[in-house]
Image 1 (cartoon, one colour):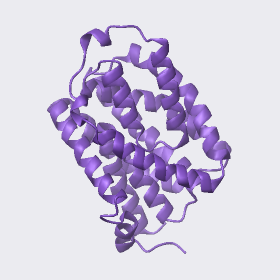
Image 2: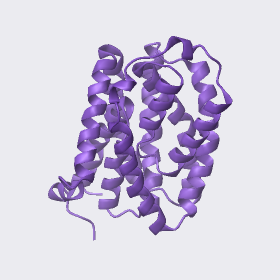
Image 3: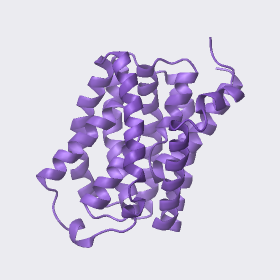
Length: 264
């Protein structure tokens, strides 16, 4: 790696760590950068999990310190997600590369549609729902979310926030804390599967992870300090930026190429 690549990996990691902690979809940036730097999609997908583990480990520590993470229920919701991630990661390493590329494009479009529908739904919790025990339906939903997270990771935060706010009744700040705990528990499992299949670039992943830790630290501090209104606007901003790229208003890869010489 040259200094330009190192700088790009760290700076993008800061942005990704911030976005993923408060909302989701930051892996769009990570995967785009890894692909631009010459990694095959399966290796980019696996390499991305290193930073995911590091940023969520950081975020969980901060949310625990701020006492906004309800660990008991969060863990019960995480268990089916962990099981699902094993299935999803195995699909990702075994599936034909053309298929996964098409699935990646379809997932991004679905993520945008999903998050543009009533973003205000994510603002307020429901105390009655929070007090209910974990249901079989929630176990099933979080298992499916785990499959998705193990498979591609992109936008997983949005699906978890939807399930935690709308389905489980948590407000946006508490839902974010539970979200990073769930991702932290299943990500090492998915990462292990990618490692066993030789689909991880440790140099890129660890350097990118340094930035992710920084971004996660800032985001978790701001989430608890500024509350749900601030988080809402971060989510809306991320949606607009991601949507603009996918609708062809700008080319993120061309933007990367302006600053970083592409590998041959």
